[in-house]
Image (tube, rainbow, N blue to C red; front, top):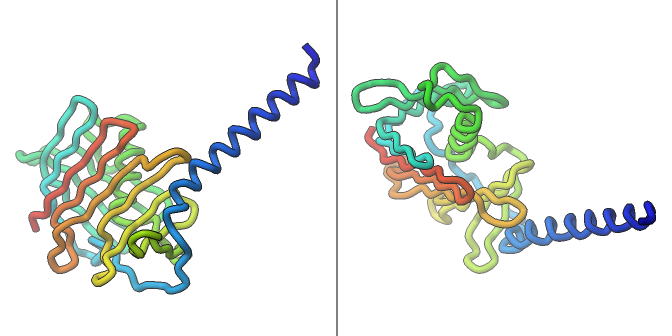
Length: 210
């Protein structure tokens, strides 16, 4: 077969793949329109020096872990400790502005993929990807305010009255991949937080204690 024909055929396939990628990605973004106004949105669990305790259940494939998660807001980021009911520590992770530090992790959970997933999810929950250079949008149907942080494929919805987050999602080129919900606020603290992945069997539910 002619080498030029092979090269041309490969080029066509690459072009088609790129077009499809842009099309499916635009399907998610097309639900929104630009918003010229800026909003004084509020981040959760961010009061420096304060600890927030949640009863937590993590479901990973066929395994369930339950206990308490302590989220401490610090000047440099957040410290997250997950303990079971008798005080055994599952993990102790420190989220930093551009990295993270593992202080402790339970041996069966010491998997690179799981650590990366936990770090990504807690950064997502705590809105650490929202920086000063955000893009404000409005959903076309509901006129709800959303934030699209730069450099990440995340969308956050905010309540019009309180400007507190109420839900969010991550998306890939083809669909929404991770769903996040904040519910039942009391003094700007969500009493319930849930996150669920659609492409892997991983979910986490948090219920506020103190």
